[in-house]
Amino acid sequence: MTLEQSLELLIATFGFSSGNKIEGRTRIQKEVCDLQFEHNIPLDFAFHSYYYGPYSDDLAGLVDDLVDLKILREDAVEIGYGNTRYDYSLTEEGRQLSERVIAKLRETDNQVVEQLARRIREIESLSTPDLIDRAKLASRMESTA
Image (cartoon, rainbow, N blue to C red; front, side):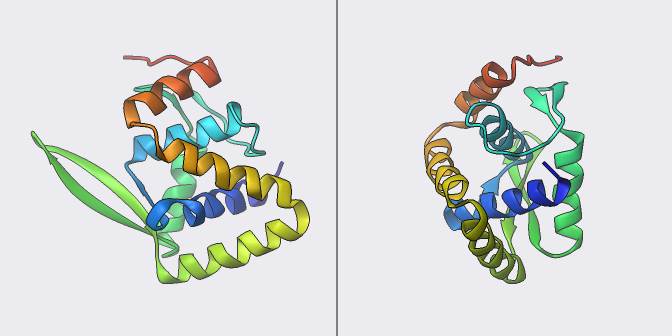
């Protein structure tokens, strides 16, 4: 698995997500971890134990790069008690890129694309605490705090 393939699958993940959006950095980390470890989607991110379970510096950096490239938009949402959640959504350019990436992936491995779409719908039905627990179990990594 190459970084390019992981990048394409990450962009497709946003493309299949409701509203082309994932709410919160924690949720992005746990969704990708679950896809990689539980559902064998061929992503190749190195995870380690961190707050709220598995965390990938590579994935966080890639998300930041996609924001810098204006593929993703980052929105700070105040959630109370001085806490902020960062939500990420595809920009119009990102949405168009996602459509092209998904079409390309369908040509090379439609089975993975269909599995990714199904798993995204399944994951979206989980609460974030349940997704955290599932990612911990799938990756065999606990929280560090």
